[in-house]
Every structure is written in C-alpha cells, then in structure tokens.
Length: 503
Image (tube, rainbow, N blue to C red):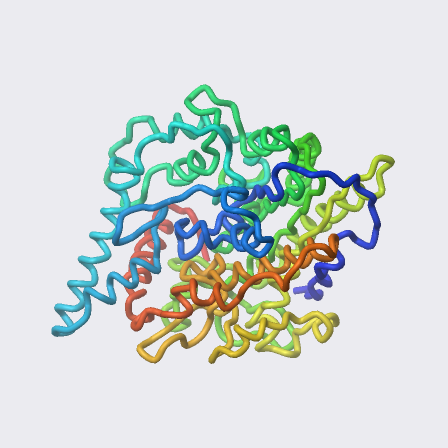
C-alpha cells in the first residue's frame, strides 16, 4: 500500500489562502448563517437534541450576539430519551439507573427492559406523539439550517415538500415493527427548515432558505460545511462502494463530488452574503467508530484491517463482521484529499476572479488530523512533517483534565472517564467540548479578518460544564454498551445473509 502523509492543515490565519480581497463594509441584518450536516447541526451520541450546544450556537455566544439574532430548531423528544433519532447517552444513563442494585441476572433484565422502553418511547414520540406532526411554519427561517445525513447535492435538491410527503405517507408493516423512527432525517429537516414555506407543495431547499435570509437584509458570514456524508457511510458501514458503481454508494468518486460541489457553488454564489466560509471534509477513517485491529505497521498511517469499535480482535468473525482493509481506508482518505483540493481550488478561484469574492477555508479536515490520537499522537513514527509546528494544543481548561481528552472511543467506569472525550458515544460526532474546539477555530478566522472582534473566543470552562458526558460520565459505560454490541452483531449477521457486505 502506498502511504503518503496527510496534506498540511490550514490554520485560521490561512483561511484566505494568502490572497487579500477588499470587501465593501456594510451592516448585514443577519451576522451568522450556517448550512451543513450533522456536525453543524450539533448531532452527538446518535441524536440531535442539545442544539443550544452546537458549534454555531457556541460561536454566536462568543460573538456576543443578542438573543434571537442567531436561532436554531429544537428536538425535545420523550423525557427518558430526548432527541432524534436515538440518544445513546440518555439510553446508557437509563440502563445505569435500572441496573442499580439486585442480583446480576435481575440487573441484566432491568437493563434490557430500560433500553426497549426508551426506544419504544422515542419511536412513539416522533411518529405518533408530540413530535409526529408536520411543523406549521413560522415567519422567518432559523439561522442554523443544517440537516444531519445530507450530502452536498441534497443541500440544493431536497425540498420541504419531499420531506413532508415522506413523513405523512402511510407506514408499511416493516416500518411499523422496526425500532427505528421512520423518516427520521426528513422529520429533522422539517424542523430545521421551518419557515414561511411549508407543506407538500413547497420546493424550498436548504440553500433556498439561506437565499431567502440573504434577501432579507443580507448575511455577514455564511458558513457552508457539507461533504462529510459523501464519504462517512464507508466508515459507519465499513463498506467501500463508489458512486456510479453501486446503487447505495458509501463514497462519491472525486469527479462526482466535484460535479455536485459545482452545483452548490453556483447556488451559494446567488446568496447575498458578505463572506462565505467553506469547510473541508474530514478524514472519516480517523473517527473511532472504525477501530484498527492488531498492531499498526511501524511508520504507516493505516492498520491492516478496521472493524467496529465494539468488536474486539478475538470476537471478529471474517464474513460476519463488516470490515475495511487498510488499502480501502487509504483509498477513502485519498478521495477526501481530492474533495478538499477541489474545495480549496474553488475558494482560490473566487478570491482571484475579476470580481473577487471573500470566500474562505475552514480546514475541518486539518483540525481533525491535528487531533488524531491512534494515527499520530500514539504513534510518533507516523507523524507528518508538519506535525511539530501544527499539532493541536488543547485549551488549558481541557489539557488540565486527567486523562486529557482525545479522539479515542469514549469509555468510563465508576472512577470516571477512562479515555476519549472529544468524540461522543456514536463514535463519529464531537462531544460538546469537541464542538467548542471547532467553534473556536471559526472564531479565530473571524477575529483574524476583523480585529474589532473582541474577546478570546469560546468559554471552554462553560462548555466543559455543559458537556454532561465528559463532566459527569456514566459509571458503567463499558457494560451498558454490551446491548449495542449484541444488536450490531445481529445486524451484521442479517447484512451477510442479505449479501450487503463482505469482509
């Protein structure tokens, strides 16, 4: 396997690629608008719930925006398991409580019962209860327009009408008996894009909503953070299937990604925004849902095989448990590197055009690379040439924690957090302190562009206090996640029976 080092990250001061652009100053009515996917939405531990703790909301607080100036949707859910589609942190805490006291067999039964009850309550709430209705609309769109699970193309093709039709169509028997909330992403979309246009005839997309906000007095800073879902399914499913070669692709070819990005670029160019910050796509093989088996070859970025984090080396069954090879992980990261080259080239061309635009880069990929634990921090031989100068230094509030938060899969016991802390329980999305780090990166970009932006940015002490997973970790997380292991093992067996994946 050919192994080359990851591209050198761009720091906040590099956002403009060293190309100055003069922008006419003006008072835009809307200081901050964000469009994106689950990361911008504030998704964590397999649910969208604490939208007030998303990175855009944390950034709005650091910018001292007045209440109501930056708005976002809410996703309450049932009391025992709030959010959509399934809050793993709440589920684990519910099992913790149910298993307190009694004989081991009784505790096990109680735990399983608590998990089944929580899943049932969540499904009932969002399909038939208070969350089951279609939002009636409002006078204005939210300022955070992100929707989890969306690819680049969906941002300008998926409409409110399509989501409404999906949510309101009669359920089949399979959907009725499935433990999953039906059309969860569409339900999330209808809340995220709640605004003046509603109903089955609405043709409004995420980008249309942003355009409407821009037409209403202008946007100062628009952040576009899309593209992760053009490759993330490969790490979640541990299956490599290229667009154009499979009816359910997990990775878009670089040419397909570039075509979709070109469509998004043209739509965004029509929005009345003073500046646009474009996020790069993170290397999805770094997130800890995919765990490298065995020992990584000396000096190599990749393990020989990647399996789900809850599958131990001893438990792995070839042909049953899904897996990626090191070659496949390299191919996925190489495709993402090409995605990001396309994004950077697009921003460069906008800044040097005859009528230049103040388009900038938020190097989300570089930020995750700078935090990567098993790839770089735990293996100095694999550290790229830029590591010494650009490895991420945690803020003092976080570096003082023991152990220091990192990107390993989160585990905890009665003594507290044992490892991890930057990635939540789904093994993909950041914790609140992880989102705080991302918000600080954007704050520093804005501060570099405008020295009048005051303060040091994100209040990491407040973010840590609000991060219940890190500040008050579940006491028996390893044991409580055993049902998750069993469920996923059954799913893997079914997938093999259906011929959906191979080792």
